[in-house]
Image (cartoon, rainbow, N blue to C red):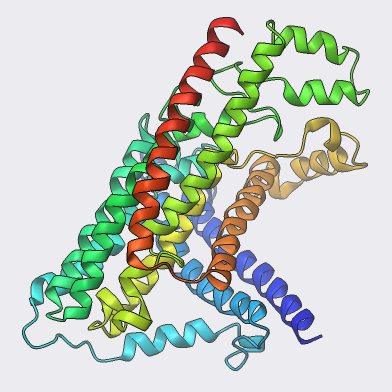
Amino acid sequence: MQNVDEIRKLTTLSIVWLTITFSAVWLVCWAVGIGLPMALDTFFHYDNELLTETLRFFVPALSILVFIPINAMFMVLLERRALAIFTVRKGPNRVGPDGYLQTMADAVKLLLKEDITPIGADAVMFTMAPIIFFAPSIIGAVPLLAAVTSNHPFYQSLNLPTGIFYVLAASAIPVVALVMAGWASNNKYSLVGGLRSAAQAISYEIPLVMAILSVCVMAGTLDMVKIAEQQAGGILNWNFFGGGALTGLDKIIAASMGVGTTSAADLVKTYYPFEGLSVVAAIILVVCLIISFCMYLTGACAEINRIPFDLPEAESELVSGYNTEYSGMKFAIFFLAEFTNLFVVSSITTVMFLGGGDNPIPPYILDKIPGLSAGISALRESPICSQLHLINPEMLFATLWVIFKVYSIVFFAILVRGTLPRFRIDQLIAFGWKRLIPLSLIVFLVLVFARGFVICHG
């Protein structure tokens, strides 16, 4: 009964915090990008296109600055609450109603703690390490903003033709910061943690990149917005390389259920001219992408030092690893970056494997929901949409899907932490080199040949 109550509290907390978080971010973006130009035009008749574009230029930076601290506080509280449920105990419940303000109190406590630099430490490197560790969390998220918002006008300028390459390059920088932190601390436990992070990154970077490259090969582009768009149309209609191997699966299944006028057999001949061979190749591609998805999640957990890959900060062995000597604001930056990295990894997974903000429910199912189309039309014609431009129905639903997908991955990472034990260092390195790297190379080669067969014969 206690666990049921804790689950209810966790659900309520998630809804409240996420509503506050994303409402605050969108209100700031709207106020700067739309509200202020509208006010200048209405009250001062000052319609300057250069000023409007300048204000919109600052929207992405403001949205990141507002979002990251609020989201990190929520994710810390979410993890503590979820772990309490998994271990059948009570979560934070002292500060604020049901403990809603616990992480805010922890943040204030960290900010007020004394900042200590150990004797014998390299002061410059010791100070720079948390900054270098945190910076890629912001820099690397830049192309993601365009992808997770379905290329919203505020973020179109951030979209890069080689977006995923940029994100992967930025994600390699934090390892340098961990080695710097371990070396500069003048502490043998910190140094071991830094060296472990370097070994771990070398072992798991290859399968992580190969898993991402598999999706890029399927899509034929490094543009994250285009990759997400090619997965549109329902969970079974993976429209990779513009009408290729997996296109039409949802239509075929819908026809077999009696939806539409075309028979399933005719659709199979239309989308898969070589029928059996083309279908086998399509199934192989689906299996390869599922394996790539699992490899990416595994490699990403290792890259951001999540359990069971948290060897660089193993409390039972290294006290706290690379951040043992850190306190106050510097420790808070490390803590903030870890949860921000988890959110970025979940966002990359959502864009590359789960279609971004696309609705995964096939359209023929949505059409059967009574009143849905009428409700969307009424919302679109309301003053809040047509005059103030405060809400865009399509953008709203895309955002809700992104939130659901991203935080589902976050919750899964928390579940893994509460379930699996930590690897030994030799097991961790062996698993990377002897299992994941060979598997990633095999999957990549099979995917390339299967994709080539479908393109040549499909």
